[in-house]
Every structure is written in C-alpha cells, then in structure tokens.
Length: 303
Image 1 (tube, rainbow, N blue to C red):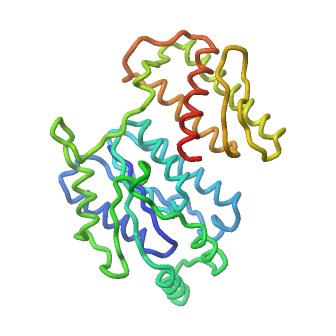
Image 2: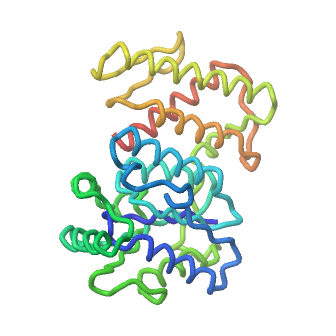
Image 3: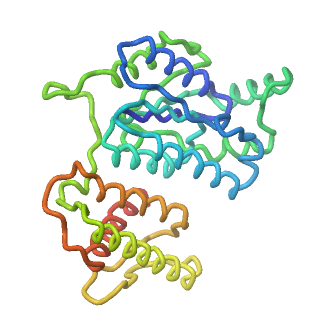
C-alpha cells in the first residue's frame, strides 16, 4: 500500500536502487506484492523516448497511466524512471493521495561528471546508453527533489558513487522500514496520504451523480482549452464557466494531458465508496463548482 518514486540523473544507479529496494521488501515482513514499473516494462527505447518533448510526454503519460491502474492498498509500486520534473513527481503524489496510500521518494544523488562517465562506459560495453545530446539535455533539465515539497517527502537519499547500492544500504533500509511500518495512533513518522476532498463530504454514489460529474468536468476542461487557445500563451485569470459559478484562475499554460490527469484524479476521489458524508446534489453546477475549486487549489500549488 505504497508508491515509491525513484529519482535521479540519467545513469545514476536508479534501476539498481529499484532492484535492491524490491528485493529488500520481498525479504522483509512485507505482505504486499512489490512491483517495479519502468520503461523496459513497455519495451520502450530510452533514446527514442527522450528524443523530443512529445515523445517524453508520451513516456510519462504511459508510466503515469500504469501507476494509476496499479496503485492499491494491496501492493507496493516502485516507479523506476528519471522522474526528473517536479511537476511530474507532483502528479504521482496526487495518485498516491487519491489511493490513500503511503508515498516516498528514493533519490540517487550522483554528480553529473560521474553520470557522464558511467553512460560512456555503458556504451563502450555495448549496453543500453543515452546518446550524448539527449544525455546533456536531460542533465540540464533535471530538477533535484527537495524534502520541503510534500511531493518529495519523505526523501531517502542514496550516494551510489560513494557508497554503492546494496539491499543493506542505509537509505534502502530506512525506506523499507518506512514502507512496512504499521500505522497506528502511535505512528508519527509514517504518513498515509488522505484524499483532501474527503473532508468536503463530496461523494457521488448514484449513477446520475456520476453522469453529471463526468459531463460537467469535461465541460470545464473544454472551457480551459478554448480560453488558452484564444489567449495564445498569455495569462489566464477569471475564466468564466457560467453565472453564479466560481472563475478558473490559472497563472500558467496547462496542457491537455495534465488537465485530463487532474480530471481523472478528481473523479477517482469523488467516486471512492470509502468517503463518508451525504452525497452532494446530483446537478452539473455543483459538480463544476467542486471541480473548479479543486483545479484552482491543485494548479496553484505547483505554479
């Protein structure tokens, strides 16, 4: 019942860290199924996947969708990829929060020069390696995790170049302890994420409510896309979706894949049967109001 995000520069030992963590979890008292999700799971070539921005976005979308389908309270999912963009790590954190599970980041902290050396050695050995141009681009755009960010916390740090990577590595042992520790009233250092929308008593349990939710949220997405196309990259403040409804305030351009991801997360949250409270009125305006409030809050946190 956890999501672990492996993070680091290209050729920094992430896959070895994911392998060691999975083995350590399987050898522990962990009763959950441990699964690693990575590019090789989908037979994706790393150079083709990072050749340009559309290809990279597609890769992240494939991995995120698989994580979304896989996270549950019966398994531990390890995402072995660069996960170098903080906005993407935030999206993964949202999936963990929507599922109501534990979350942590395992960071392989290796200097650029050493990563560059390891990449060259892999190429000389005939192993999978990054093209130099792609490698330099990925290094330049890497956004180091910061434990002050909730989507980067708790943060367990490995130093593969200095200490190597083993099942007994301190960071991996600490991560295993965190992931397998039982959560009860005395557990203050272990956190299970909770869907924030639960506190609003917003549960759509009837078929009609779900239909209205699906239709209303799609109309909001369409309004944002249309407004962005007319703004041509300019600021978007106060997008109106109807009389008596809150305005959408977005301080940056938001792509359709991200909007769809937010919509999926929102629908998943509102549809969870575990949420308590009386269902809200099954009308489109109520659904739009809730979704706009959600978007304003979520987009504002990573702007």
